[in-house]
Image (cartoon, rainbow, N blue to C red; front, side, top):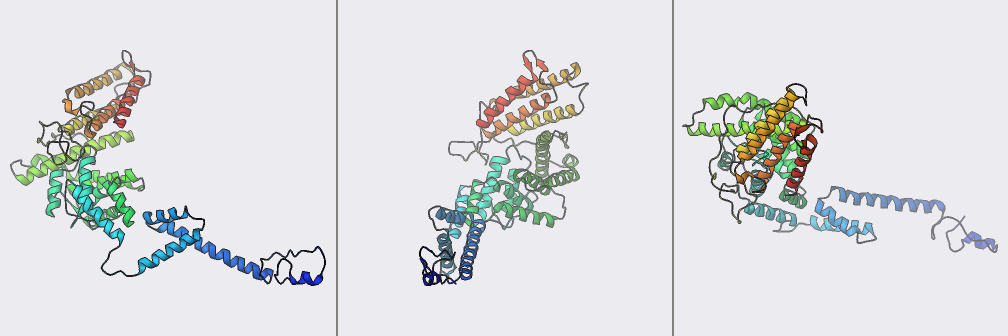
Length: 455
């Protein structure tokens, strides 16, 4: 039996045979192979358990804490020493501290205060949502009306919504709609991302959960705000790609819009009665805005739009029509204004382009004769002429080169979308006019789109 002594064990020494080395595979100090294996197994098992604990810290801790652990791991050769550091830090945090709050709580409060101060549209979070305070909610609502609403999501009346949200009640604001707006905007918000890093709170998931809760509470109530909120949840699913049932929100929204029957209701409303004039304005924006968004969405799906152009004219906000650009509050845009500049008249131009896009897509479903035939090309050239006339009729401030701001750039991409749909069914070699084939026109449109993206 090897007694574990080194460099030669006791048994080998007693044998007194020259040239014989002890090669018993146990570590120095181990009495037997069994005890050595037991000690080795215990050590490896302990290390395995501690490495798993370290991995759990990296996986489960808030992002800013996990990054600090990762940073320490990169500066040491002893990863388990880092684990002990984390354990010690947890023990210190667990100790009660009188009249103090955690660093993360203080930083979160600072983010709320900074968000409120920088928000041009200040609104209360209560009673609409319990997810965040006035600062974050004001920041998200302001961002929505600055960046999303002016073109891509134009179906909410900003003035009526903000008034009712500030007042705590009203037909143009609901808890479902507020949480849906905050869900969508938080996906792209740097402030929401910063808040998550500090608090480990996923604002998008929290706002979405609360929106779903209010949707269930409404129990299918037919209203303008429910139509709007349902469609926003569809757009949320488009952005994050996580909800395969997102199209159900779209269909539910369109179905409820049909049940609202806005065209019939608008025809009966009296402009001389203030609350009826407000409802008419809200319905006008809802139906025209939904029509425009659906035309764009349907174009992406290569299907005819489910909504026809409204039979009544859009009721525009005439304020600021004499001004080049406005800010989000409707005041003339200056060098001190909050970005981005908004362009008076861009909505009406977008709706005109949306009607033309609808006509083009419906023509593609039922073309006149064979695609590319003489009759068909006559119709497509006529559609091109209408598109050119629309662009030429726009005032200079709506031009994307004369006034390169988000709304004019979006408007030009919509005009190009009309052109793409006119050409899309044609063979690339089809001659549109002398010197221009479908291919060359498509390449020119693509070059403009690249320029717009870079701008």
